[in-house]
Amino acid sequence: MKRFQSTKIASFLGIFFNLLLFLIKFIVSMITSSQSMMADAMNSLGDIFSSLMTWIGNKIASKPKDQDHNLGHGKAEYIYSLFISIIIMMMAITLIKDSIFSLFSPSKYHFSIWLIIVCLITILTKLGLYFYIHYLSKNLNSLLLKANAKDHLYDSFITCINLGAILLTQYGIYFIDSIAGIFIALWIFYQGFKICKESYDVLMDKTIDPKKRSEVLNIIKKYPKVKRMSHFVAIPVGYQYQISFTIYVDGNLSTYQSHQIANKIELELKQLPEIYSVVIHVNPI
Image (cartoon, rainbow, N blue to C red):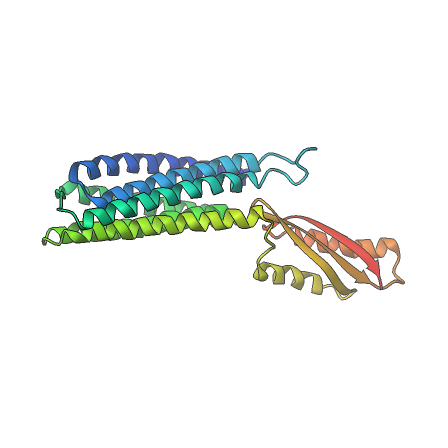
């Protein structure tokens, strides 16, 4: 329960601050005709969607399994994320086109001290969110929060690039504003593509990554009475996995003894945060 509550708080903080930053950046970009600030504003808009999806996904994923959803509701997060990632990529393509057009057209850029102030506010806000959510992710061992924290950190880097472009315009290098806008828009497209791929992989039941699979297999190998293991299957359930496999034990062991081995393995595997459930079939050898 603490895990879902903390994720809910992190999501609300992300929505509130990103909405505030988006409004400020959008207004200033309209006043100054800065392509890099407009791209940064769209980045904040994408972050609002990201935080909103974290909240919706967390809310749905927190529902217990029922008769119609035997493995819970975890995949709903990835269905929403897939739609949002497509919107983010389309928005990025529009920004790239606008920035390229601005690069080859007469500059309408107007410098304002507010451009620098907004960048500094964004960097400080994003770093604050990063440190807080990173702290939560480590305490709760949450992959969702870890990804959210990294997003805030990368946003602060993007705004640093925007700030550099703004400062260079003071030396008459106006084209750098459009170039920074293109770079930020490409970054937004890349982030949207990553979300799309992750969502697609989960919805297509992509198996657990090799590193985590090795961790699971190493736990099974700790039990000397398990002579062999086969039919390993890992099915994603939201950000977790349901795993199933067959173990082979000495045929002279009683049914009770062989299932005690399976129970111990199951309990240990369930300690891994990525594991949702474990199904073990026992065969004599």
